[in-house]
Length: 299
Ligand code: NAD
Image 1 (spheres, rainbow, N blue to C red):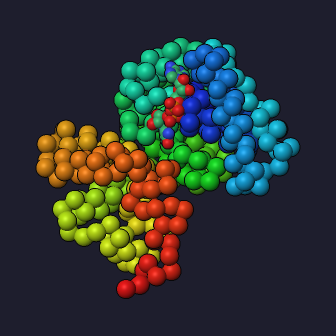
Image 2 (image 1 turned 90 degrees about the vertical axis):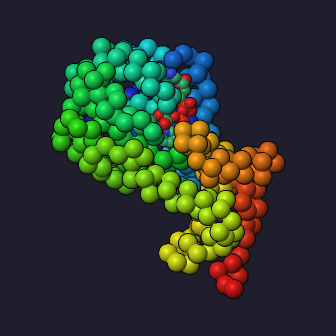
């Protein structure tokens, strides 16, 4: 199935990127959000994206203008989806908000329209029934800064039709993504199923005083040839996110390791404004962190 019109629901961080990337690659895109005030903010957000497309992709002013002109902004869901072949949902990561949205969408979208969720942590099966068309529903998960971190994890739930899965894999490629098909539901998709345990293992080694930050990163970098160790990755992700995950696990399990780790991240990093790369310091100091020095991987 070939798509012409795409609707992106939610014009926040990811929604604005998905909409602009699709328009940049030639699709007519409708952007839906709850009111005009939010849509005005989205217009500013997209204008900021244009500077990144120039810097990172060498996009010309003309190309960017053409892309922008393929966008239309709506606060009415029926109008926003009138011509949609595909609706990509990027609204808040709150179950009830998404459930309400899919119930509303089911009523107004054309029968042929495919729905895809960009949810990072919720599973499509949680919403399949609310969509009223479970076989035409799946997850299409992008990474932040989609124009350069160009993965699309495409994940079925139990009753997603094969031809729908295939058509979203093709669509993802047409907007410049590397498609990563995931054949069954998996919390965290592929990337976070690998990354979260790795980062947690590194943090636990640290909090148990097994080895220091640089030793752990060096082991990973030399041993696997990776350009970053787990703590350098945590600086990119942000220490607040790492803290929130660990705090959640500490509360859920009561395990002393998690409690100690949450306390370490809070007192030694967050309370001192060391939130990672974004603030110039986390486990390393930027812009010239130790791990990029030529001697870092030597004795
Ligand atoms: P965000 O808070 O930046 O944007 C959410 C947008 O949805 C806002 O513009 C808000 O006004 C709008 N919204 C709220 N209720 C709505 C409704 N009922 N209908 C339509 N729009 C509504 O959030 P985000 O970071 O863009 O995340 C959106 C989704 O994308 C989440 O499911 C998240 O898990 C996922 N995601 C986020 C990232 C990331 O790095 N931020 C990466 C991958 C996936």
